[in-house]
Amino acid sequence: MDTNLKQKLMRYMAGNFSCQEIAQLITDYLDGSLNLGERVRFQIHLGLCFACRNYLRQMKHTIATLRQLPPEPVPQHVKEELLERFRNWKQHQPQSSVRSENE
Amino acid sequence: MKLDEPGLVQALQAGDEQVFAAVMDWYSGSLLRLALSFVPSRAVAEEVVQETWMGVFEGIHRFESRSSFKTWLFRILTNRAKTRGIRENRYEPFGLSASSDEGLSLEDSLFISEGSRMGHWKDPPNAWEPDTPERALLSKECRVAIETAIENLPATQRQVMTLRDIEGVSSEEICNILGISETNQRVLLHRARTKVRRELSPYVEGDNT
Ligand SMILES: [Zn+2]
Image (cartoon, rainbow over all chains, first blue to last red; front, side):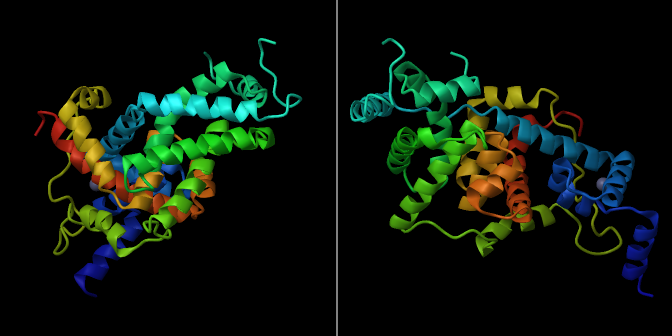
């Protein structure tokens, strides 16, 4: 048996993913879309491998950073135009379907 | 103003100007960000945002709370932007085109590809600073690096990442908005994250080498 295949077989029996496989599966893992067996093997690897633990944390940090990006600034003239379009639209609505709160 | 949804939609349906103004103020930045992932220029993206709100004026009476208001907004924008992208000759149908494979090879390049240590890290990742999001976003240089990385993503990866990681839309809703499968969505997201992680890395690497 060639060593590559033997290694694969051993890994399978030990239930271990390679570091590369862990990296590939991170989004699936975070999404909860791994099956039970995969999730257990993923966590066993993490328990034994500080590098993959760090990588998982880096990915989580990346996601958290993206989540906190500020929205795109909207130019004032766009905001003003939006309001104008709204007023325009409202004026052309039949009174029965649109009522202002101040009336 | 509190954007609590049931009352919000009612006020919009009643055509309340103050509420509309506040809601447009609140969501237009997110809409603009998403629009930029579909169309080639800021000017066109701003028009798409305008068209989206026109669609909201016309359609708010038909809005049913089967999805969240925000998801509904994103769906309207996506439809307008796709139409616009086709007109601008820029819209590519979804799929894993060759150009979106670079995320895969980027990930592969982190690992030893042959020999007995195949599949192991070339350079084992170290720990990032624990206060990473705050630290990263305080640095203008780093913010620009992240935004540039996002801009350089293939369009579909950028759309998925914008909706999921930046706007926090659920994967189910994203599949619905963009018309892609869950698997495809995850693959696109994963490649996008892999690239942004690399660009973020130099700014937040700890001293623990
Ligand atoms: Zn590992």
